[in-house]
Length: 272
Image (spheres, rainbow, N blue to C red):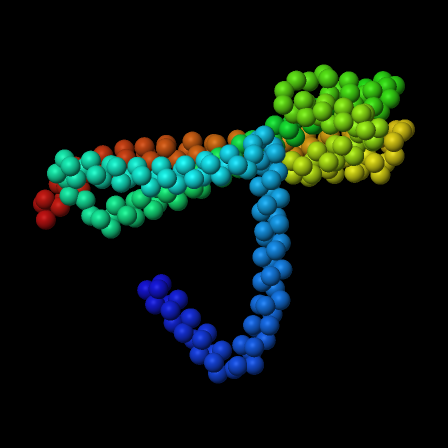
């Protein structure tokens, strides 16, 4: 039924465009202007996001290409080997079904490395934002205690361990070696890893100035906004987990009702 409706809609659209060629010409002109721009923007965003995911997970593009090729070959070969063994054992297998399984497994092997990369990159982004929030709090405390900006930043970065604090220390060391502003390096780090919050914090602090209480107020506001964002994400994850935990209970309840009601329904139907 759905296919019939879709086919009818397409036929109606074709007849309309043939009946009004001027409308068709205007649509083609608009599409010829929009499609290249949309394709270029989509390609740029996809490449930038993929590049940032690779940098965030400390991988290189050549390894991803090898993994995808291996996934395609392995995905296509596994169903063929399995169905060959079944045919040797005397089990009849449809060739069309075997080809479909090979294509599906090959596509899965091609897409799986990208999905794993996105999952790991998302986890590392969340971990980095948590560490960056703590880094801002420590920097604000040291600034309130009378320390200088660079001293407070380096001391706050040295106070933590892990991958995120290591990246922050490396950025600050590069800024000190190049004699540039540490906020420029932090902004570059945020752009490299596609961390908009880090870039926004660095930009807002630079606008606030390099000295005085304005830096402390700006850091305090940004750290508080990051904490609120993290708390909302944690609450959303907890609510989602709670909802998922309720599904098995509902299924068990339905199974229990069916188990109790089945004998009664059988007796009633048998009496008819």
